[in-house]
Length: 32
Picture (cartoon, rainbow, N blue to C red):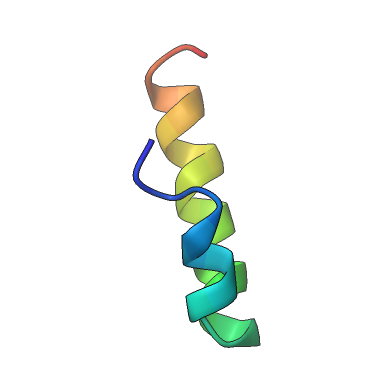
């Protein structure tokens, strides 16, 4: 997954929230 570890450090709060929702959506879409 691209959205892991280091990404959370780099992103400010709001972007982090959006990225987390995208990550969840991607995982559901992939059937994880």
